[in-house]
Image 1 (cartoon, rainbow, N blue to C red):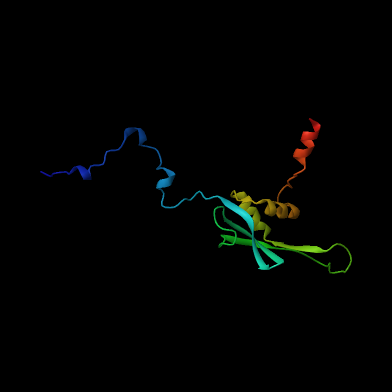
Image 2 (image 1 turned 120 degrees about the vertical axis):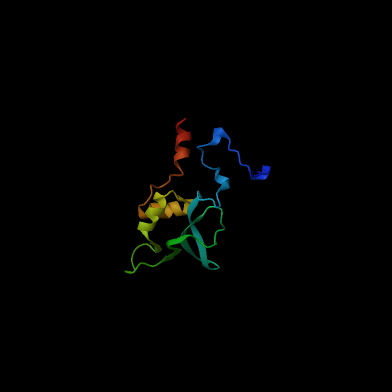
Length: 135
């Protein structure tokens, strides 16, 4: 005859038989919120940005999941010498499309850069003002 102590007995609640465990019981949170944003580098008064994918709760210059490209906001003269100055944007568009496809949310400056390249529709901030004027 074996003796079973009360600490070894595990009774399941019949109402929770086929339910998955609570998300907080997982060893890590696999449903993280991702942001496409700019990480600043460069010197004082000479900014240079990396376009990165990072978790939403991490600091601006913390280690990102992936670097998608770079953005240099300092206008450079055009190669031909005529016309408007050029701001340099280098981006891996296939990886940017992938991260947008899996749900990464771009910040407002990143949204503006991605819309300049043609990956997203531009946001119109003046649209709300026009709607109020019509009323």
